[in-house]
Length: 129
Image (cartoon, rainbow, N blue to C red; front, side, top):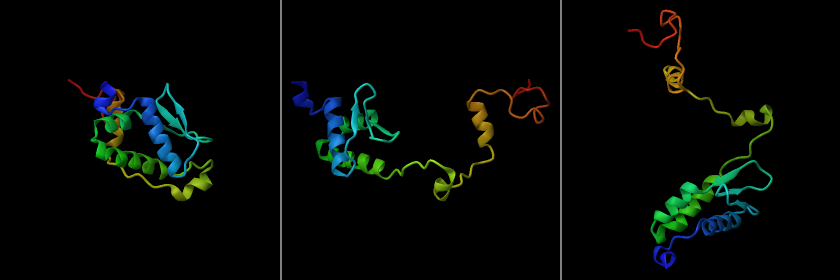
């Protein structure tokens, strides 16, 4: 009775909805992996993990669900194949420009205590008291 009132598909039913949408868009043969709640692309090391999309789908009005699935499929269809060697991938590379503080912030967030011993008086500590 809950299923009829909520219009919430099971995870397996949702995976089948998405699998059919991929098939209609020209990506047939996706394999449903229940333990991971994911669809695996055949012959590629790529999967579509469905947890977030399922939550969005279930919380969306019925009228918006079709568009949500279409956007999911379109987003994955736009991902190019990963090239096996640098020469083939080179023309697709883009530089990343980061703020000068990026490295220090990364070290802080990863729990490293020493940023720059020269700058910290060779104490190896971030702060001195």
